[in-house]
Amino acid sequence: VPDCVVVGGVGMKVNILSDWGATLPEYDLKRDQSLERHVAAICQALKAPGGKERYALFIEATLEYIRPEDLANMNWSLQDGASIRLKLRPEIIAASAVKKLNSGDAESKKKVLTLMKGRLKDKEFGIKFIEMDGIVVLNRYIQELSKSKTQNLLGFALTTLECLISFNIGWDSLPPTFVADIVPFVTST
Image 1 (cartoon, rainbow, N blue to C red):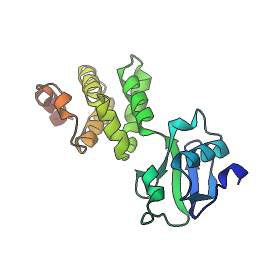
Image 2 (image 1 turned 90 degrees about the vertical axis):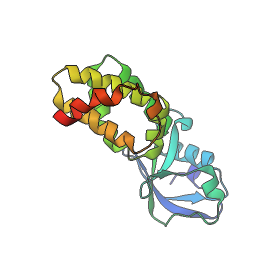
Image 3 (image 1 turned 135 degrees about the vertical axis):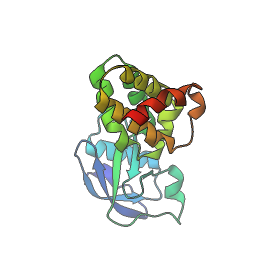
Image 4 (image 1 turned 120 degrees about the vertical axis):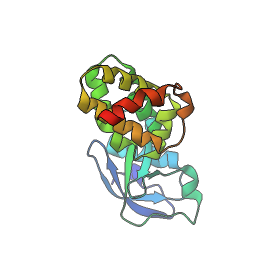
């Protein structure tokens, strides 16, 4: 473990994972250090692409992000050996998804849709996606797909929409005709 990772104070031993395969076993997540400092040290140790401000720490078991106040709360803890993922912040992933769904690139749209179901397990991502008018963009794409004969892709889009329903926010941004427009696709697939 690089010296930059050992930052002093009482902590919890956790395993750090990343989306690019780098790992940091037995990282000491210390309470007397800021979350920002931990993220910076982990980014440096794992050689994270881009700046440290792009990343957050995600608890794999609970599907939640570690917040700055968690480390200061003595009632909050993680079991030793817990898996924590260094991942892009949800607002960065959501902005990228919305941008790609808005693009004219069919392959980018397809890739985003195939990844959405898994990403929507992350509630923070779902909320950010909705706040960035992701539902409106997805609705436009569903309308576009409904005119083509791409049933598999339409199925992915409708599954994504179904997952977004569980967040119970953002529906006021859809046009009033949305339900009437979407019902024929749901009932015919």
